Length: 284
Image (cartoon, rainbow, N blue to C red; front, side, top):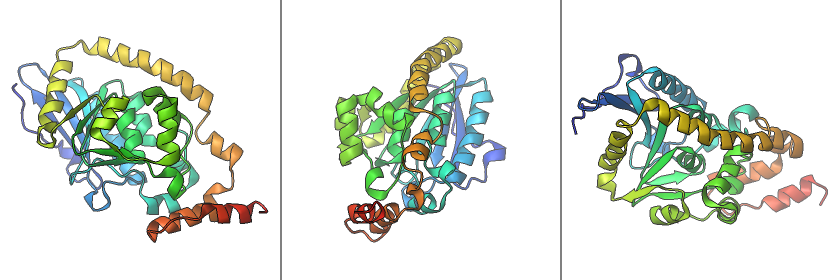
């Protein structure tokens, strides 16, 4: 139905981590934006630089009154493997361990509908990002899951609690404590995905959902999103400000031997032994 080709705005044509594009539907008079994580060599893992590029593109899409939806995607056949482990090991606490990671905050606060187009891996922070989006459409090849408690990633608070609101408390605890991998169909059955399609049909399916959005009142859609966000804001208020749980309950964790063992085991591709380090640090 009358789509133009994807084009990059002139000021966004030298991306480092994120490719930002727009296209318009000439029949419906509106358009959509797409942000594609472009670090395929690390399965689109993100860093602080990724957030800066995301934030800039989100601002542009929000300010463009012709844009009705924002699509998040990944290059190289995968959505995202989450936070770059090397960066997380070196990053300041505020960057890597907060209550609500920056990319998720951009999605939540954006007044426009944000759609995750997921193929391949959506792991760790990539999974957080996928289920934080307003709508999640997955290729049948997609795999969802987490690595967090195995690799010493202390993400906590709102974004973790949101999983319980999305798929139920028991499933959310299973996902975060035991780290299973879920197929696209399993994620759909759990309520983490809205639609599953063949991989080669993903782009067309996302376009169809966007076409429907462009026939809806932008003001009314934005009011609906604010209404859903009101519920999430209450939950966020209970989980506390950015990073409060870690500062209160485990203030020394980021530099601990326990965390270093988890990260080192991950890079060495071996089974971690965090309890030995934990016991040694806590008088065991």
